[in-house]
Image 1 (cartoon, rainbow, N blue to C red):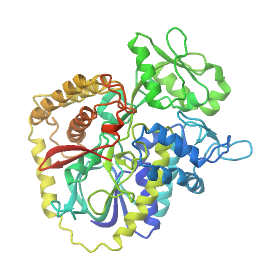
Image 2 (cartoon, rainbow, N blue to C red):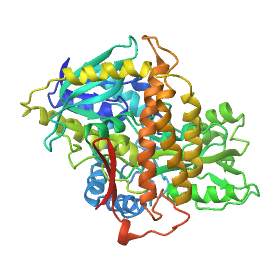
Image 3 (cartoon, helix red, strand yellow):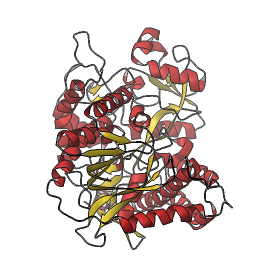
Amino acid sequence: MRSDVLIIGAGGAGLVAAINAHESGAKVRVITKEYPTRSQTSMAQGGINAALGNAGEDSVEAHIKNTLKSAHGIANEEAVRLLCESAPDAVEWLNSIGVCFSRTKDAKIAQRTLGGASAPRACYAQDYTGLKILHTLYDRCLSLGIEILNERYLLNFITEEPEKEDAYIGGVTVLNIRNGEVETYEAASVIIATGGYARIYDKHSTNSTGSTGDGIAAAIRAGARLSDMEFVQFHPTALKNSSILISESARGAGGYLLNSKGERFTNELAPRDEVARAINDEIQKGENIFLDIRHLGEEFIDEELPQERKLAKLYENIDPVHDLIPIKPVAHYTMGGIEVDKNSMTKIKGLYAVGECANHKVHGANRLGGNSLLELVVFGREAGKNAAEYVKTFDKEIDSSAQTQKAQNFVIDVKDFTNQIDFYEKRSFIGNIFYTNAGISRNDKSLTSALNAITQIQKEIPFMGPKDKSKTYNTNLVEFIEFGNMLELSEIILVCAIRRNESRGAHFRSDVPQENDMKYKAHTITWKEDSVLCADFME
């Protein structure tokens, strides 16, 4: 089945790209392993940044300055400038297609302050911002008649002339989860919008179970490059027992962070890496940490933070109107991803990437709160238009037969793996060792120990195949393939973290706690040659 532009992933980035590719005249098809409304975008609660000045003095230059400061020197200033200068138009576009932003008394889009911002810049819809954006985008795609195929799991990208510098994309192979068949979708252009990889941290992550880095793993296998994979942002405030996210908007509204003694110990609106480390330091001292929003009052909480109250009641059995919220930092967002150029294209011609799976070099070592939703709109629009434009001059041949057969053989072979070892136990083990050894604070010894453990698990993978050998709705099979992708990315993250022998943003090395601009003010690049992982630094 051939299309002009094929989009893998139906979260915010994928749907924005789909709308704009469609409006640029391309025949668009979207493929997703779950359903659009279950994507990680729905968990972005706090807001989307734009220097509108609706709640206080602000400027695009201030937005740029805040973003670059948070990035700790390794963001691309040209890309950051594009992001921030495009922000007001991005929000106006969302407003024009029906996103129901909260409003001020004079009907302007309401804005609040998030961590690291010098002004109230985050445009919000209560504390459901990402969810309302996502639903609006999905409605828009349906109204435009854009084809969305659900329950198709990405296996690999089809590349033509993959050994040459002028390799180009030809489509994808996927597993139809419903019937167990391998399907091939050919396309002149493919946009990867599959999200990040924070679920490697398993229960120590705010992310959905689907954030397993599938598109990123498939991209490096296809010949693309990855960058900055060691930078994983830990959100300071997740519920202690469940890792469910409590939005930064709670602190932006005036919430306090308290230790067991009732002491405030940090600036609640500092950048996330600083706040997460401050909390972690207190926990290491034996303190329990709490978020206090009681002083905001029930009326305000129900109007501005209704989801946070519901989540605290549901998962912690406490009411934040009257009680302290027990919290801890957990893995939340991955700054690293697929290396792309200013047009969102990878090293492979016609293969684009956008959203959390891509590295546009706007977040650097630490993402500024409110910039993730902005990124997926700004670069999603650009990627959709650029992919549609690329198709107009595409005149190559696509022969997917060999790679389709390879995908079919892969699924058959995986089902033949024995099940002597339970990969679910190994998945949980990896999450725990990553949180402990490659978490908020790491060092050479802890990282090397984790890498040795990953290397051993890689050797054992033929002995931990899926128990379920059936074809239809074989989620056991899908989860095993996801596990393989997470295992592949785990090695890359640890290799990058060991090589970056300094501390920078979210990558804090207790053995080398200072930044080293002379050696490491650069991006960590990884790629594969003959299936061997390679890594280097590049400015």
